Image 1 (cartoon, rainbow, N blue to C red):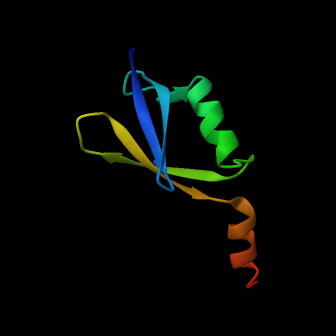
Image 2 (cartoon, one colour):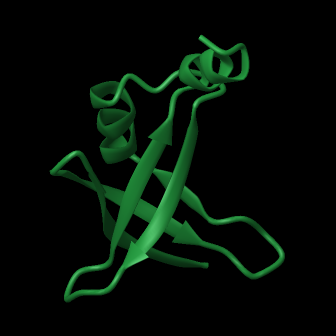
Image 3 (cartoon, rainbow, N blue to C red):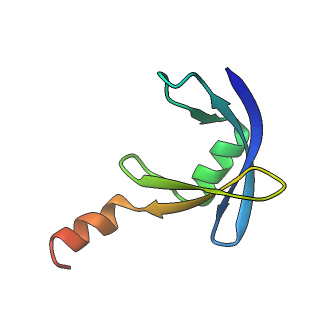
Length: 79
C-alpha cells in the first residue's frame, strides 16, 4: 500500500487529503480530515458523484467535478 498527501481542486480552492493507493485489485481511498473538510465545504451528500481528474504538476493534484444528485434528478425529469 502506498500513502501520500495529494490536493483536491474544486472551484478555485485546494484541500490536502491523504490518498491510500492499494494494489490493482483493491480500490484506492481518499481519507482524513482533509476529505471531511472537502466534503463539508462542498456540501456533499449521499448519492452525489465526484469525478477525479489527475493534474500534472510538481504536487500530485486531482481536479474534482461534483455532480449533485438533486441536479441530476431534476435534469432527468425535465425540470
